[in-house]
Amino acid sequence: MVALARKAQPPEEETSAFAADVLRGLTASPKRLPPKYFYDDAGSLLFERITELPEYYPTRCELAILRAHAAEIVQLIPPGAALIEFGSGSTKKARILLRAARSLACYVPVDICGEMVEREAAELRRDFPALKVLAVTADFTRSFELPAAAEAASARVGFFPGSTIGNFEPHEAAAFLRHAARMLGPGAVLIVGVDLIKSAEVLKAAYNDKAGITAKFNLNLLKRINRELGGTFKLDTFEHHAVYNRERNRVEMHLASLKRQKIKVAGESVDFRAGETIHTENSYKYSAESLAALARGVGWLPAGAWTDADQYFSIQVFKLGEERGGAEALKT
Ligand code: AVJ
Image 1 (cartoon, rainbow, N blue to C red):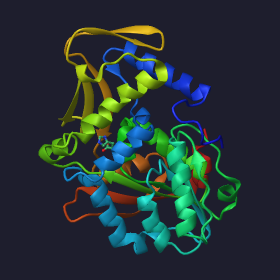
Image 2 (image 1 turned 90 degrees about the horizontal axis):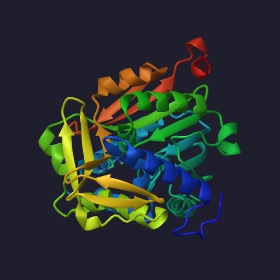
Image 3 (image 1 turned 30 degrees about the horizontal axis):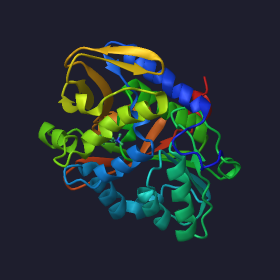
């Protein structure tokens, strides 16, 4: 892994991937930006604040489910398995499983934010001295290498909480589940947290908090573009919008330009009409059945499902089918 010392300036290949994605998104029609770029240091901190907002129920519900059912959930983890978390963030949820699990070969937090993942790993080593913690800084939507100890473990268990799966288009979510199957291999288990379909009022409030933290989180993407790609966005000329799209079961976040303007980014110039928006995120909501159907389609069999009292959120556990060689059958 690369040094932690670099702060504002990420390595060149990361910057050019960011620049290419930003230019592609801002020259598209309608304009869009990939939500994974929300999570620089400031964005990761803003997201932590979102999870504590009174309106933002997903994190609280998921934590409640994990706390109430950790013992049952960890029973589905084979002895001696490696636990691999995709997009580990604060690792607060993993800690609940780690406390309940008995014999793990190692815990592998994977996150795009290197500073955060290294800091969390250090704290986990202190709090769980018997546990091997192997942090990986990577964009988990692309292929990355697992630490040798995870490859050598009896089995690999993926942990994908937070309804991060909802950021993907449904076909991308299926592709991710297929990719996870291939990566985790035979005998794998996958523990997924997903936000459930519910009333538009509850959903809208969760993404339009009164304190304005979600707006800051959304606008921070422009701040990051200014800093890392020489962008000239004026933050007070863009406005946070979050709407629920009922037909597609997704909350959409946008940034709307309050006026007609020209912006420079990475040496290119981008025009905005008054009111024109950048689509920055989709947060798809599923039913327990629709997620299970998506997973089954790429070889994952339902092994357990839990929800909270309001049925706002669900934790689902899947196993790879043994017939047709499990993960091997998906290799094509
Ligand atoms: C981390 C993707 C699950 O979609 O609810 C929170 C991100 N965006 N508020 C979500 C988010 C706006 C969050 N996920």
